[in-house]
Length: 260
Ligand code: HEC
Ligand code: HEC
Ligand code: HEC
Ligand code: HEC
Ligand code: HEC
Ligand code: HEC
Image (tube, rainbow, N blue to C red; front, side, top):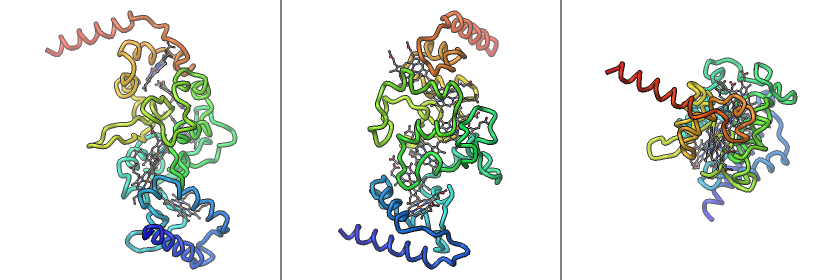
């Protein structure tokens, strides 16, 4: 009970402080908007772990209100996440102090309706509900519009688990994020590597870090170097044969004997 009282106090102070911001610096939020946000937050992992409005909306040192926090407000608790996000294609412009990435800047096909969406933590997660199941597929398809991305939902991987019923993707699920924002062991924790470029270069990094959690090495290699299969988002078995794999093996052997 004490905790609930405390939370309500924080909320009250927060709303009051919104009213105290001078009009020029503030945006006007209706009570309905604040209620909606509070509702989303109340059932989130953050509310359960006592991460309150002020955890993100108040500068820890100056105590000043931040109306629209950036990824810097997440850093104190999610250092690895923020660091990895900033190093991938999605975040690198932000790291360099440029305006955030938008689909309008892309060479890959993107949804017309998303052209001006700015990339931030809030683009994939609603920062108030911090839902990760929705972030793992549906959020990507708000922007991405190439054949590979569009074919995902009808692929065998998408049929493994029904994602919409889960609070977060489980270990059996293969989502866009399983392949592109893979989970990694960081110290004793399993965290999501938010660098969306990391597993693409070299391409077979994804084999080791992702596919081989479930498939054999040969199936994985044969699949990932099959461009048509990638385009279909792995709709069926690889058509490439072991031969290719044998070549890789021979090459490796040659290389290692040279190194000796
Ligand atoms: C995990 C951090 C976090 C917590 C906790 C949090 N917020 Fe936010 N909030 C943000 C971020 C980040 C944004 C900026 C979103 C954006 O980029 O538009 C934001 C935006 C807002 C906005 C502006 C919305 C808009 O349309 O521009 C309001 C109002 C708000 N939050 C209220 C609240 C209230 C009330 C609470 C507590 C019930 C809360 N927030 C808890 C991170 C947080
Ligand atoms: C005061 C510490 C704190 C701050 C600040 C904070 N978080 Fe969190 N966050 C947590 C904790 C604690 C958890 C729950 C434990 C866990 O899963 O690590 C969590 C969990 C999450 C999750 C996973 C939710 C789930 O259901 O698995 C997401 C996504 C998330 N936070 C995003 C953010 C974003 C985005 C920001 C900044 C806008 C932010 N957090 C700011 C502490 C914080
Ligand atoms: C491109 C979409 C996308 C963006 C942008 C994004 N996330 Fe995530 N995030 C995800 C997905 C998807 C998951 C869950 C993946 C899974 O569970 O396999 C996740 C999981 C998390 C988690 C829980 C797992 C963990 O590593 O602790 C946290 C915390 C989190 N995100 C914070 C953030 C923060 C902070 C930012 C901004 C720096 C951010 N996210 C930006 C898609 C995104
Ligand atoms: C706000 C729109 C937006 C969302 C949401 C989004 N992306 Fe992207 N993504 C982009 C843009 C823009 C690019 C850059 C494309 C280009 O340069 O042609 C990109 C690039 C990528 C790349 C290529 C990276 C590289 O280094 O070439 C991958 C992979 C990717 N996104 C995966 C995802 C996944 C997975 C999700 C969901 C978890 C997601 N994206 C969510 C806009 C988005
Ligand atoms: C089973 C793993 C897997 C899944 C699931 C998956 N992808 Fe991919 N994705 C790949 C591989 C492999 C490539 C090809 C990498 C290359 O060409 O170097 C790729 C390429 C991409 C690219 C193009 C990168 C570039 O620069 O050309 C984007 C964008 C992308 N995926 C987004 C998504 C989205 C969005 C989803 C979900 C709707 C998704 N992917 C699901 C494995 C996956
Ligand atoms: C979490 C486990 C998991 C991960 C990770 C995973 N897969 Fe799968 N994959 C499966 C399951 C389960 C199936 C469905 C098998 C079936 O229907 O018989 C499947 C099916 C496939 C198929 C279709 C096979 C067929 O015969 O129709 C291909 C191709 C494939 N995966 C390639 C990959 C590649 C490449 C990666 C890495 C980029 C990958 N998978 C990552 C579990 C996984």
